[in-house]
Amino acid sequence: MPKTSPKLPVLDPKAVEGLRRTGYPDKFKPRVAGREKRVLGNALGLQNFGVNLVKLEPGAQSALRHWHSQQDEFVWMIEGELALVTDAGEQVLTPGMCAGFPKGKADGHHLVNRSAKDAWYLEVGDRSAGDVAAYPDDDLGASLVPTYKFTKKDGSPY
Amino acid sequence: MPKTSPKLPVLDPKAVEGLRRTGYPDKFKPRVAGREKRVLGNALGLQNFGVNLVKLEPGAQSALRHWHSQQDEFVWMIEGELALVTDAGEQVLTPGMCAGFPKGKADGHHLVNRSAKDAWYLEVGDRSAGDVAAYPDDDLGASLVPTYKFTKKDGSPY
Image 1 (cartoon, one colour):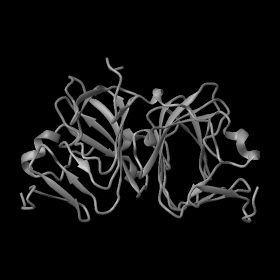
Image 2: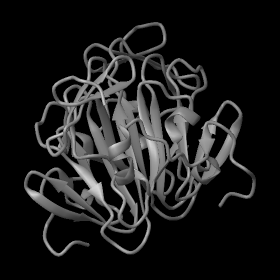
Image 3: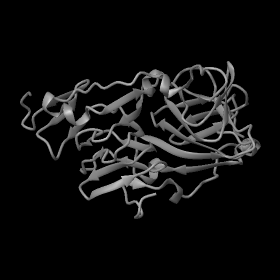
Image 4: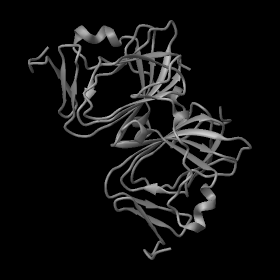
């Protein structure tokens, strides 16, 4: 650690509050109950993309399995082990590995902590307008208007 | 490390070729000669933003000190120590710290390896159109048309 406290544009991520909020309908909230996000990008004043430092406790998921129509996503593993689930099955992510999810690629993904220890990763996603998220495993749809509005797949509300 | 080789959308960054190219005019190239970039975002198929894993050898700089008019930048320190130089002076970045440079903020920044060891960091930047980069310390200007074109500050070519 540096000898003095960092000042913007430098940030010590551990000084940022960890948030456990989710916009998911109630029935899906338990899946991300062990997820804690430090919203670094906003804390640094960035607007064009978001950067979160995320902790997943054992059993927790990064999100419901999903893909985005207009927005790219990137993940960098920092600590612990996570299973990345896609249509092809599972791969284990360990520190120093990364993963990327190009916009429009119809292959749902999420990270699941199947280990007994906390896992930490960095996630980056842009904020392109008109994004729609698809959830292959669940009766959920989401459109960005201007923040994500969650509905059932037929468009009806939860 | 995982027991099998990762497959997309997972990537082992060390499997990506390290590039030492720069578009700077010749007189500035020595400053980034010890800089090696692994272009992870492109390797993962991402388009909306770029992600590079960067190694800076002792004495090397991340870039000439600069700021962007339209594009945000984010840095995550992975290994080693780097000095971040801005108008306010220098701060030391150590592993697990981050920094962010909002578009339009007229405070030039770059990273300099003043240590005796290699340093590694992750850099993220979006690709918003119409970006102009300003270089407060050098007779250099850059506009994105469609890739960065470098000129002297008065617009004349090098």
